[in-house]
Length: 86
Image 1 (cartoon, helix red, strand yellow):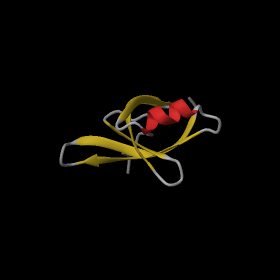
Image 2: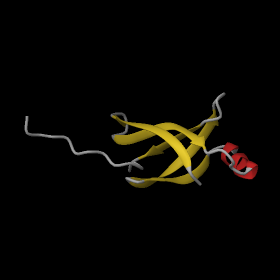
Image 3: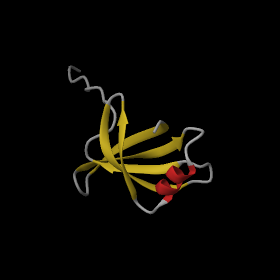
Image 4: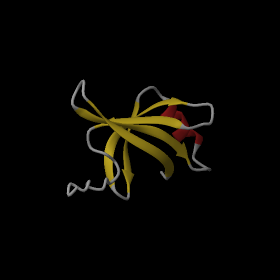
């Protein structure tokens, strides 16, 4: 199902893993049954973008109707390699 998502990521030194997170907005016209499935506690899904895909967990819904989305490890989006020539 098409969604709009805003994501960020951080390396967490306490476990040495990459944790990514953000908010997901459903497109207008999504079936109410799908909204109900997403509001179930700890729903899991695969989030895919033009730059990758990863397993994710859906969390709480905020007052604006967006869902919190989190994941650990592989990012669902591409990241440019940093320049090391400085």
